[in-house]
Length: 359
Image (cartoon, rainbow, N blue to C red; front, side, top):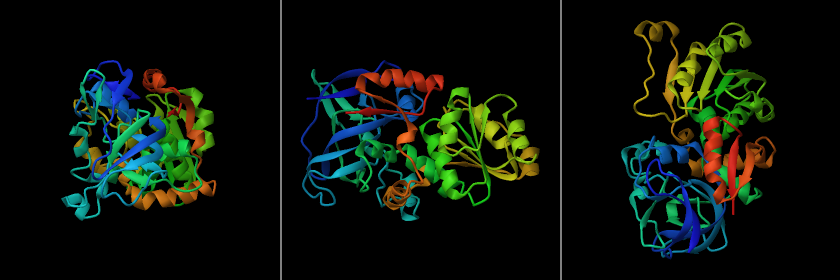
């Protein structure tokens, strides 16, 4: 039996309880978690914005040490440090076939599996495949990547979602070029990764936008050259900071209609907006036909940073070891499993960067 954070039903409070995990079967890996990041996607699962089977063990951004492997697993062994990949590619669907592994049709297929049981026998699903809000987990082998050498395992947990998403949004989706200006909406864990990635890309001006004035120091530490407290006049403020034109690129990390629209309006004519935030299906963003033609802007969705973890983790590791990307500065709170509900509340209130569950 191990301790875990269980979502009993959509909209219900998390329960910190004991669960019973099976031994790893063929093609599976058992892992002792070192740390797990508290991501907005976990909140989206708990409130029903994202729909996956429940009851479930939440948590998808994690790292740990392999305890045991099942038959047929050869790329990791007991004792190896690993990073969890919550969206593994199947390698066989249409999108995998054309190299868009982040859009794999079967990436979340494992969420329907039975992962563990509570003490009374209730069957539990793995929230986003990997069930990282637990002392231990058992996952499919393709959900496990060797952890990059020279990076503390606690910090390496952030590589599993926030960092790959933020870095990929800049380098793969928006394709920020040296000298361009970038505005980032939402300075949570992903937003902090976007700021650092924009700095690495050589952006000339990096504007951070958030509802909280208290995040300015954190944003500037991550690479922001300017800070704007979000309001109805944010696009005007961004244009003022960019010579009246607007930013070349906007990255939206909130997932609300107002911020998506505001990000789009903050870019120059011909500018590019990448939407990372996850909104609800009942939330509408509207544009009129004339403005789409006149402004010539692009608006693009972004899943998991359009990243291929196997390709991108080694690149990120080099940036981290060289001091260009700082994982530890993204963590504003280190908590236990019992602290996850409060971390959700802080996320809703727009407080802090990344909360990290440390085991």
